[in-house]
Image (cartoon, rainbow, N blue to C red; front, side, top):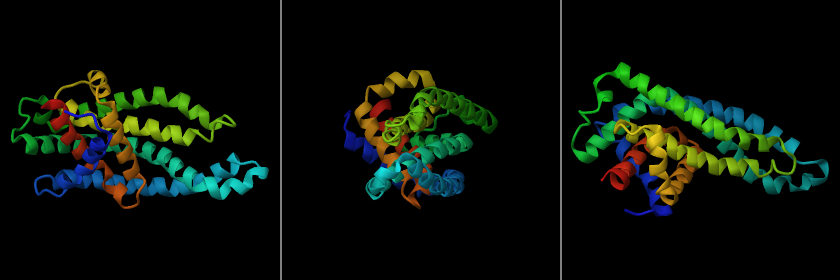
Length: 240
């Protein structure tokens, strides 16, 4: 088992080979529609907010820097907005993402997770998935608040979007690895030390996922692709 940055990135992209499989397509439809709606809203909101943020960032005597830093800030600011909307999309799509992760793992192993009580009831699956998402939101929120404060501190707020980009990438690792790990009855608290053992590979995974969320059209597929890729990585690097 490796801990390669590039291998982590490859797992994120490997999810594309799963979402078109005949028995997996039905689990992809709802996450795709959620991403389509929420990312469209996020893109509209983001373009309105980014110009205002840049206007307030630069004093008049540094206006000449606008065309230098605008593209960089644009990408970083979109990462802030899209990572926020990704959390919302995952909260709404949690039950379907859980079922997609289970379907991918079943395909990889050839064995259904029949001993997992989550597979026995859609109602119970929905409740447990949403409960897990709320736990993750609380975990992320407590760590995001200090970082968000940097956006309002003059002189430091220039770095805030870039730090958020890295923070968001690591949070997305926790977000998506939770689906296959929770299906195998590993609680969110138990997951964290397991994931830290392969931090380099997972950072590669998270940064690639973050990049996918910033690319138009591709970001609509990001959620089901990432769930599939995370499950593939879980199965090869952690479970077996």
